[in-house]
Figure 1: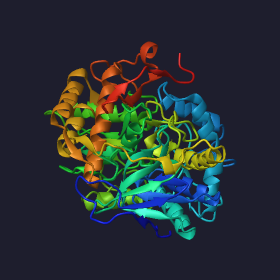
Figure 2 (figure 1 turned 90 degrees about the vertical axis):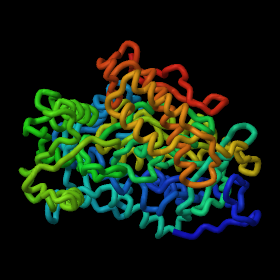
Figure 3 (figure 1 turned 180 degrees about the horizontal axis):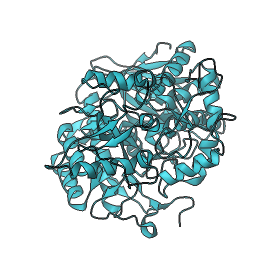
Figure 4 (figure 1 turned 180 degrees about the vertical axis):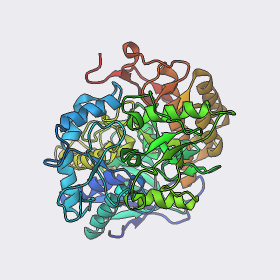
Length: 558
C-alpha cells in the first residue's frame, strides 16, 4: 500500500467544535472500509485506471471480514454434490429469506459467484483441499443449505484468508490507504450529488476527501448490542452516513443473531464465534439437561436457518429449570481431530478451559449480521448520485429477512467488483457530480445516546424477542437520553451512528406487526404474508429523524 499525500489548507489543531477542514485530498473513488467488498472494489477500480483512496478507521486488516469463519457458499463447476446447482443454491437462499429476498438479485449475485471466487484464487487465496494432493476443494454444509457447497480456508479461518489475500494484493499494487481515519459525513453538491466525505484523523483533526464517487463498505452494526460476533468498529457508521446523505435504507429490523458464540460468564463486546460448520460436521445443540435443542423444531434439525436455531435456543434458555439460563451446549465430541478441522474455535475454547474433544462447548446467541441496510441495486448504486454501497452495509435484496450462511463473503466479492465497474461507467457517462462544487454539511453536531445505556436497552428489548411495550421503552430511552454533541471525535461519530441506527431499527420493528426471519415479535408470533411480505423503506425527515416510507414490494411477492 502506498502512503497518502494531502495538502494543508489551514493550521491549528482542528479539534473541539471547530470542524472546518485542515487538509484535503482528491480521488476518483473514495472507498470507506477495507473488508472484502471495499478492497475488491478498490483493486478492480485501480486496475481500470481510476484514482482510488481507501479509508478505514482501524488498520487495513481489521474489518469484519477477518472474523468470518465458516466459508464462502458457492456452487463450483465440477465440484458440487450430485444434483446441486446455482438454482438450488438460490432456492435455499430464498427459503432462508422468508419471502423478502429479491429473487432477481439472488439469481444474479449467486450466478456470478464461481467467477468471483476464481478471480480471488488467482490473487493467491488458498482454500482447503478435499484431500492431500487433491486439486478439488473441501466442502462443508451449514445451516439452511441442502448441499455441501461451502468452501473454507484454514479450517475455520476463511475470512482471515480472504482478508490476507486482498491486503497482500493492495500492498503489491500500492493501493493508497488512509488508516485510522473515520468518515463523518458526505460532501454534496447543490444538486444533491455526493462528491466526497469529511473525515477525522485519530487526533480529531478534520479533513476533506473530494471525489465524484464514494463507496460505503463499512460493515455492520453489531455494537448496537452488548454481545456480538462483530469487532468494535462495527458501529453502523456507513448506514448513518448514507441516511444523512439522503439515501434510503430497508429491512433494518432484520438483525441476524448467530446461534453459537462462545459463552463466557459476564463477557461483553465481541465474543468468539463457534462456526456453523461445526454443526455441519455433526455437532448437536443440547440444553442443560442434555436434551437436544432442535429436536422436532425444524426438518433440518441443527442445520436449520440461523433465525430458527437462535429463536429455539432462546426459548429453551427461558424454560431452563430454576429460571432463565444464559447458554446451552454444543456437543462436538464426535468430531474426530477437532483441533485440526477447527483450529480457531479450538483455541478459543481452550482459553476458557474447555476441551471440545472431551466436553460440550458452552454457547449462546449473539448479534451477528445486518440483513438490511442502504438500498442498492446488485451493482451497488444507491438512489443518490455518487453514493454506492456494498457488503453488509448494503441491502441488495440477497438476504431478505434472514441471511443464508456463508452468502456474505460471496456477496462482497461479487458486488465489490460490480461497484467498480458501475463507478467507471457512471464517470464515463458524465452522471456524477463535480467535487469542486461539493460543500461540507452545515450541521456538525448530532443527537447522541450514552453507548452503554443504548446497548443495554437494545439487548433487553430489541434483540431476538421483541414486543410493542419493549420497543416503546427503547424509543423512550433514545428520545429522552440523547444530547446534542459535536462530531469532533471518533467516539462521537460512532455513538451518533449507533443512536440513529437504533432509532431506525426500532421504528421498523415497531411497525412490522408479525414474526418473520430474524424479526421475532412475541406479541405477534405468526407470519403474515398478506400484509407483510414486503420491505420497509426508511429515510430521514428534515429534522434528521428516521421515518418510514410506504412499504415496498419485493420481486415475486404476492
